[in-house]
Amino acid sequence: MTYNYMKALLPVSVFLFIMCSDPLSNNDRIVRTLISGPMQSGEYSVFWNGTDDHENLAEAGTYIAMLYTRNFTLIDTLTALAGTEKKDNRNEYYNTIPVLMDEMYDNEPDPFYIEDGTNIHFALSQDMSVQLTIQTPKNE
Image (cartoon, rainbow, N blue to C red; front, side):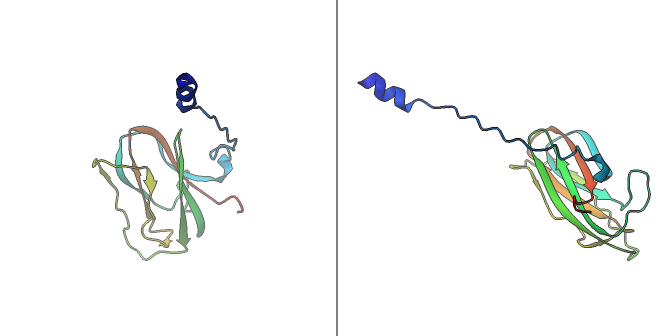
């Protein structure tokens, strides 16, 4: 009887499979790739200057900043206004302080003028390979 009681307390493995599409499979939505490769853990601020991968100025509208890794995807919505305030919004940094969780913070400034650019802020809890892209939403 003791054996059966102990057997009931043993851990059980449960596998759950969720099928979804690869968020990067729709490359026609990608406006700009800001990062693609390995990064160290820490806090980051990466500047997007409002241009596409061909250095053409993007249009005013809604964009998605997508940080994609093997284990997770983080998303922030960006609102770009037409024109400029003639401000230098660049505020790039990398801080090696320990980070407890992976997260993406609101871009700054938000909304922003497309010609002035905006900063994408995020944190990585461990060294990993990442891809940070600016994309148009699916419905556009």
